[in-house]
Image: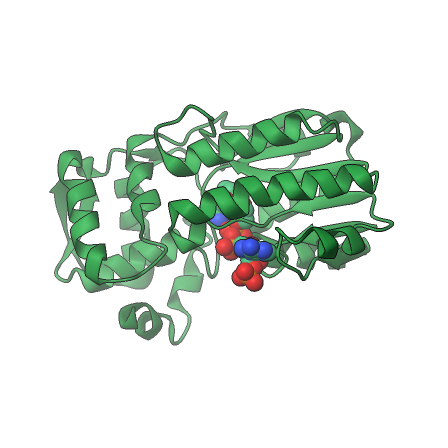
Length: 287
Ligand SMILES: NC(=O)c1ccc[n+]([C@@H]2O[C@H](COP(=O)([O-])OP(=O)(O)OC[C@H]3O[C@@H](n4cnc5c(N)ncnc54)[C@H](OP(=O)(O)O)[C@@H]3O)[C@@H](O)[C@H]2O)c1
């Protein structure tokens, strides 16, 4: 039996759908991740845990420590007690306990705890994901709507990325459940196109038919401007974690998905039409 933590989140939603399609049995963990009693009860009879709880969407460094690091430590403790046989977690490209960036540092600490847990694990370091309801394309689109008639390109939009389609990641996670060759491994998964941030913005504007003039923003201004704007405008997803991304390229092998899972991931340009769904512009504009 599989237990999924964070099943209601962006990745969790796609993973549960995928497991339904492949007719794998699973349960959703419905308590707080730091609650040992609730964890103990939920882990009874569980073979595999897919751990998708994370607090990065809240945009608060304090929560990263409490939910991501301490929550994972609590889960590990209770999983050991329940003799869980496999732990699958989703980390980020660039995870490093010594990183200067809080999100990547947290992810590095979580990975370290999992590696030292003694429980067979698979750590999936994923690129930034795109798909309906993401905090990437919808965020960039929302910012472009707000910044009429301009669209900002930090560092001229030079940042290199390989966005990965959420459903492709979900397919990989579901497959990892039965892949013994991936046990005790850390694998990096990303899309197979290396795009610059400016290309991503252009594709989003073209897909949605929105016109904006690109304005280059020197990197040195990015943090002070983000801090200034978001000191009075609370939009958790556009936190300092979003700004941090522009300082760390997010690239991996171009054939990572093909290499580990034998299929080719979806192309970015072909899969962003969800931005045209009714009501989205109004919802993004109201933020
Ligand atoms: N999205 C990406 O592009 C991406 C890329 C690489 C790695 N990741 C990592 O993958 C993981 C999941 O990401 P996501 O995009 O699916 O995040 P998400 O949409 O924000 O979902 C987070 C999930 O965690 C749950 N949660 C948060 N705090 C909790 C707590 N204290 N106790 C129990 N549950 C809690 C949320 O449930 P409630 O809302 O009910 O609290 C939600 O189900 C995170 O660790 C993230 O860092 C994400």
